[in-house]
Length: 250
Ligand SMILES: Cc1cc2nc3c(=O)[nH]c(=O)nc-3n(C[C@H](O)[C@H](O)[C@H](O)COP(=O)(O)O)c2cc1C
Image (cartoon, rainbow, N blue to C red; front, side, top):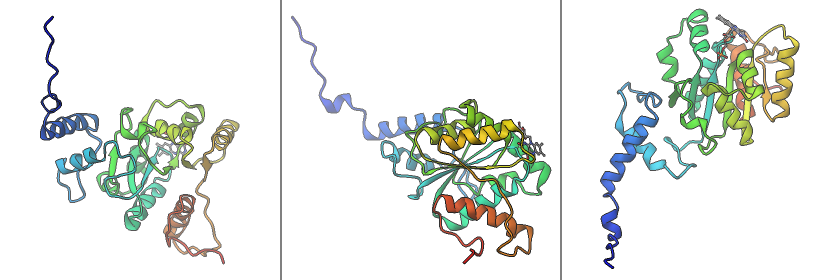
């Protein structure tokens, strides 16, 4: 009986270059529309993909070498809180920011601020399409230190509380709860009905932290930015991220 020769290991294995090319092409499809142009505005720099390829199989390695924090922005009033959080994280440079913004957030940004959406998105290291449920942050195997949803609408709260993860923001939050990672929701609505309160209770029982942006006055705020920064500072405290956004009570 003729035996089929077993190919030599090296001849079965594509060359390193081919392997990398195919990984880049797979990753480009996977992340298509997700990885932001880099911060000097160059479109889709292939080196970004290459760095990402090198991190495959090494979940603790990140694009920047910093731990990853997911920031979600949903469509409640006061997107200023989310924008200030992104600005602070950009200044601090202590985490790598992975941003997912719902369509509602984009609407509230356009209706309630003068800010330019592209400039806000450019504050993050990686931006995801909120409809892309195949994005990296959809999986618990993608290592992060957790997620802050700022601001968090009652719709997103309810999606998270019920495990109805039909968009990327609620799926990423669901992943944080299942992986027992920190999840902070800056819920924004007033007054609250029983459904809102019960959803907050459910998320709290599941390990999440409800952190509504409540203005404090002990630091003697002089401007609206002082009020916003104090609330954002409280959120950073929950991730043990050092900052000087407000004067602490002492
Ligand atoms: C200008 C504006 C302000 C809103 N403010 C709130 C709010 O404070 N809280 C809230 O829960 N929803 C608010 N909504 C409604 C949400 O945008 C809406 O429920 C949306 O479906 C939320 O979806 P999302 O969580 O996917 O962003 C507001 C909508 C608009 C247009």
